[in-house]
Length: 133
Length: 135
Image (cartoon, rainbow over all chains, first blue to last red; front, side, top):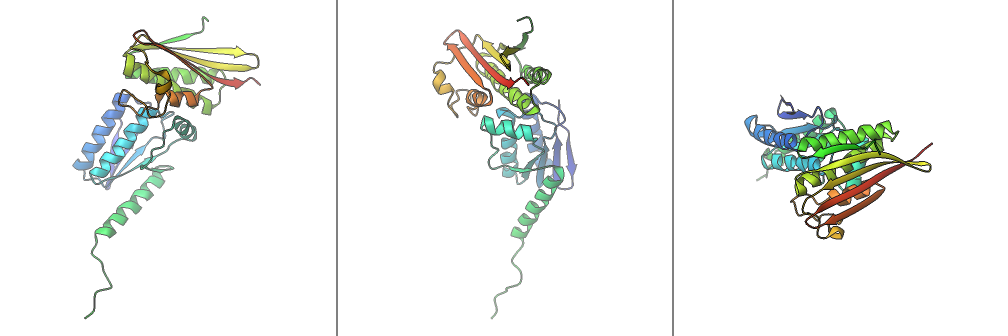
């Protein structure tokens, strides 16, 4: 089952709707990384609210998506991990280390807004404090 | 044991199918949603191991009763290459398939009972059980 990817402003939102096979997950990874470039996306949200289980392959794929998107200049946030899913992930030893997560879509969007704003400010030349003399 | 569910594992869709059937069976037997998720995740890991190492095999699911406890038993069977060093395969991070190496040790942590019997050249049988107290 293909995961729909929506473009909203500078962000891509992939909403997983049902259980995914390994092939579906790999397909999602390819599609997102390609679209980050095509739409010049600054952020990616992967909504996993509908996933009732996350195993090591799913977690590895999400981690790969986040790292690949970052290499392409885009921040990723995983949203909607359910409490039981989080419990099973920790038992399995799966941590999503180095990948941003947020409670839900709304929090994810807020996070990306902060991240991209911070990035823009980094790029801006310093203002104020001009050297005198 | 006429109630055994036999699920062939030969493609990635079978992994999804197996964990969904496991969850349904656990739900029907009265396991909490937390336990259902744990059982589904453990099935997913060992079903994928069958695909990665043996290409094909099967998963058997059954519900058993032992005194005041009810158990969901998962048996994963294949006739693949077998595991030369089971103790090592049960260590976190050890993988010969390029995976995370969390499949067997992770499933072991998720379930209450966990047993691996493997013969090189003949195959592997993983038997694991999640228990709940009957109330």
